[in-house]
Image 1 (cartoon, rainbow, N blue to C red):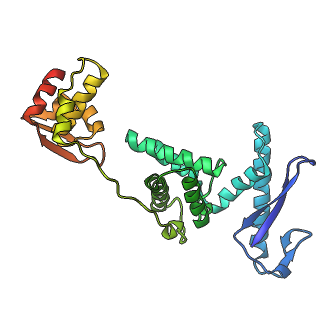
Image 2 (image 1 turned 90 degrees about the vertical axis):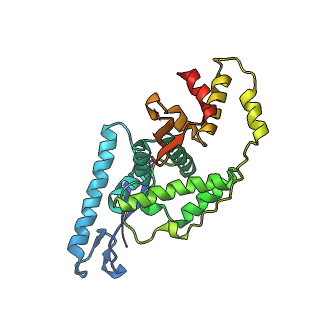
Image 3 (image 1 turned 30 degrees about the vertical axis):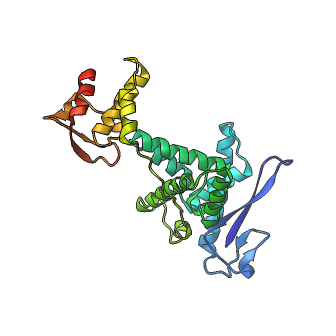
Length: 275
């Protein structure tokens, strides 16, 4: 591979970094003094042109950052240049995906996943080619070390995988080495505890002062129960127009599925109170 060495910084803090180009030449064809490919290589013209172009881009990026009074470190400059070669930023794509998600719950979930991943990276950016198998395994171990439960780790990794796969569909990232094919995600079956009839009656009959938060919460809980397990988000989005001919008809916030549920007699007092 052809690597361009460049120096960046003041004479005191000057550091040497290398940018890899997508070219490979025999060592015998390389001129270390002039830092160019010799004429003995049939591709010396396009390769040397690519080298000069990349050096110019490095100089322009460095100058632009100084004009904006936001000087870049050598590593940051290298990452900017590498991005132009390797492809788009995974972090930027993930953030765009979270920002464009309409459902508030899904949006918050994606943003939480991204924030946690950025804390692990301890850096501003990550390119798609850098998201490899070793990094993903390291992140799994990191989450486990934090004390995250199996299903919490599963959800965090699942969101990252979905973002990566969506980028492939959008052709933002093109690769034949998808690291997720080697990553195994574990999920534990959760045990759902249901209230028995005695407990439900206790909730329904418990004496609460009308108008309090607990009073409204109890009404919402019981209405969800009488509507055959309606989700809290769906309950909060119900309007009187969804009540038609003794049925409650609405589209779910999760999956946008149409539901038509018969309103049981027990739910009528709750609806009457709120009307």
